[in-house]
Amino acid sequence: MTQPEPGVHALAVRVYYEDTDFSGFVYHASYLRFMERGRTELLRGLAGDQSDLHRDAAGLHFVVRRMVIDYAKPARMDDLLEVRTWTTAMKGASMHLAQEVRRDGAVLVKAEVVVACVRDGRAIRLPDSLRRLLSPERDDTDPTPRSS
Image (cartoon, rainbow, N blue to C red; front, top):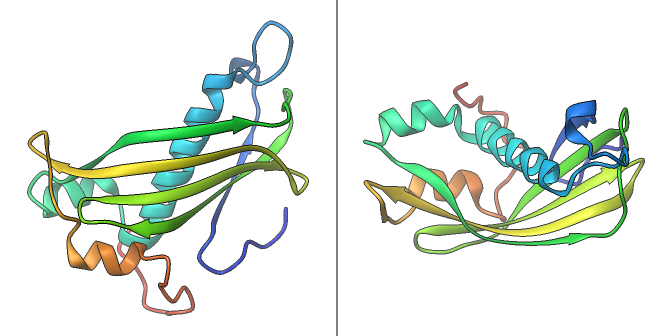
């Protein structure tokens, strides 16, 4: 795996038998799980655990509002994949993310994801502290440790 560009989070994922269909290829829904892990680890790396955010921000949590996926090439059992995740835009109550699942640098799957910030089932504005951490313009060279 290669070092991702600044602002891009990379997560290694091994393909297991449970991730494949009867043909031995990764089942399309498995990529959704891989990308969910990528988004969760991006957030964990920048802002800490989602359970802590939920508690500290009076019930704030994130839901996928929209996802567009392009499946370009298949992966197989035992492949080592890299899930890359980065923020493309911040809106009032949502963040727009791009994701890629790669194998040996080749892009297998691309996704555009809109994640909404909600509390009690209603969209709320992303807190400014999260907005700064998740902004596409953030400075990932900042040595300030994040809570974990």
